[in-house]
Amino acid sequence: MRVGLGRTHFNIVAVATFMDSLTEYFQSHELRSEIQLTGNYARDNFDRLEEERQGIDEEMGEDLSWYNPPNVNRCRIYIRHTIDLYDTDNWLEYHRSLSEKLNKMHQIFSARIATL
Image (cartoon, rainbow, N blue to C red; front, side):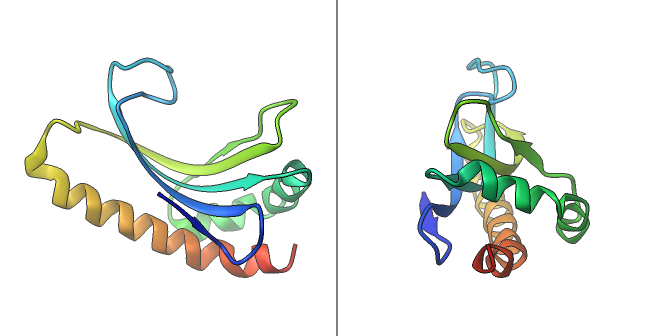
């Protein structure tokens, strides 16, 4: 699920996937809460946000992953958690956790993105 953050090319994204983004294999599942930057200025905007990385990580209460691949105009700042999507008994907890992370990311990033 992707929701705009008040500016074109900035989205907050909720991901539940059967693929582990670290290994790029389907060995484990994950939840990701992420800020996605796209467009011609994605890399420049990413760099400006990354200048505040330490403060952002501290506000978040955990280290975020900062992903800025070369030659691509799409960058991501995210939190990932390994889960078992087949374990339906935990889905309510997965939804709660994902909602908490997305709301906190929105609080932390929305004002910063508005000033870019």
